[in-house]
Image (cartoon, rainbow, N blue to C red):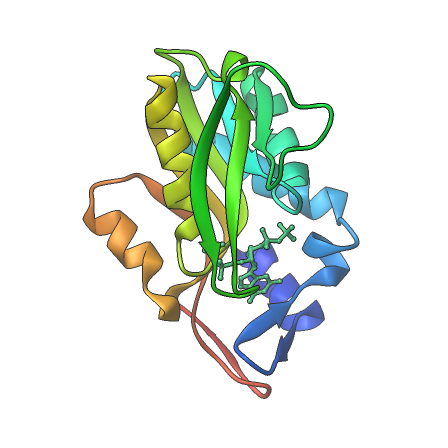
Amino acid sequence: MEILRQAILEKGRVLPGNVLKVGAFLNNQLDVKLLSSMADEIYNHFNNKGITKILTVEASGIALAVLVAERFGVNAVFAKKSKTANVDGELLTAECYSYTHKVMNNLILGKEFLLPGENVLVVDDFLANGQAVYALKTLVEKAGANFSGVAIAIEKGFQGAGDKIRGEGIDLYSLAIIDSMSDSQIVFR
Ligand code: G4P
């Protein structure tokens, strides 16, 4: 998606450790106009799949997930990374290791918010090592719902998870795929 690639080139910054900082429009400040266009693009790709629920993980995936859900006319749900006081009832859980933060998170979602037979589209801001996507897929399967596809804003293609996920026949749609990056250059697929 050209306007997202332009935003990455103009406002993104590559930090040591292969981390792309995009706080100017995605991870801290939210560029609502850009995010709205991204949501339109995701809707156009998945609109024939009978999507009934958008699923993401807190925190940075939520903004895009909400805009996408609005396009489909359905609700968005987000998995939490820890059990807080306002979580009760029957829970779906899935382990998720974060390579970036070097911690194991237990993703948690109230069972009542993902029902058997629902067609679920997973939305997230970044695809790096794919742990979040696989953990969200586990939640969908535990719910007895259908894993209908994955929409990602920025895929770090050089980390390999995207190709693995596509190789498994999953409909993965990334709006920008970065094949390599350094502090002087970002190369898109
Ligand atoms: P995964 O998301 O593919 O499983 O990969 P990983 O475990 O490495 O990612 C851990 C966190 O770091 C995720 O957010 C992910 O979105 C984010 N991340 C990974 N690579 C980059 C990057 O190059 N730039 C930025 N800005 N983020 C990256 P999280 O921990 O769930 O954080 P948040 O959603 O609460 O912000």
